[in-house]
Length: 371
Image 1 (cartoon, rainbow, N blue to C red):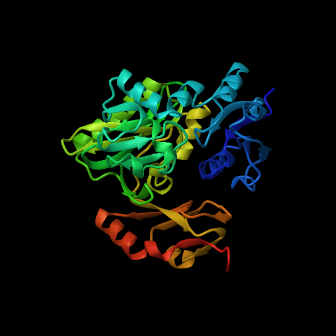
Image 2 (tube, rainbow, N blue to C red):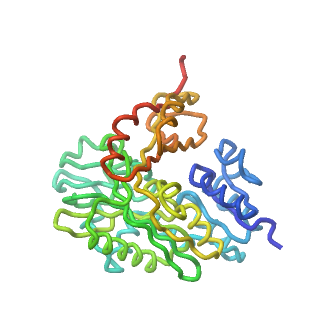
Image 3 (cartoon, rainbow, N blue to C red):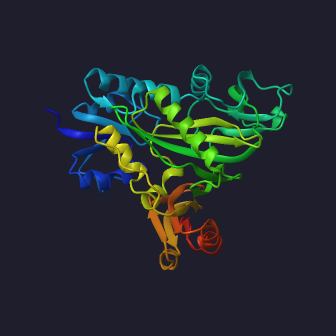
């Protein structure tokens, strides 16, 4: 007999946003992570461990199903769980591809998925043309990517050798398509989300849902997202980040095999959130409908300074109509760290953007070290 129905590798904010659905369905769940996990106060059972250590990952072998809230987990551990009959979603095959940006790119080209031209570079020299450099493994939240202006002397050491070079796309918009796919092959797809980026932090500044694109592009983006999910054999939620070029082409950029920042708005904007559909897919339940309830704008709450997190402006922001605050429960604030997000609902894009510009500076999180 399996002791727990569901195990989750990683106890960050994504796992935390899955937990309400586990409670609603009375799904027995244990989370494996370090002692400071933001999920620890809320999950039914907590398993201390390192999700990058194969032996620790095997602590979840008494679960029927295992999923994750980040892709930087032990592949060896995932394979060992699968060998023991645990239903791991997404599978070790999917994670192996997505953990490495070179393997991702090869997957795109092997499956005839349009993507920015690229090459693998052993040593960056002044002869390399301008473009983006990506560290093959370990990059997240804007880390592990930089723009190369043609001068290698300006680069951090991590970008000088064994990197992926990618042509700079002539971008009209950056889009994300969230696809849910169950073990039975059932699929649901959300309308494309438009992503506006903070160029300094290389993080999403805000998202708009649905994206401001014409119906034909939206249909093509959703079809492309479904094609990617089918080709890779995804079970769970897959976020497909895309470029819409100025020539009207859609290029696949990167994949995230889990709920994604660009889909956080679905908690309020859609009949079924990305978190609920991820769990439905993983647990073999019918997928929920993805109909839009209202237009949405979501922005990240980014920490400043260092030390114990101090929040400001929560009361003032919550007083605004159609505004929802999500505090991720991170006690320690770090410069540039995602501490939460805010979703705004309204009937028009103009209202959303107006509310954002008038009120997003109300809420701040900073570290109290030295105070």
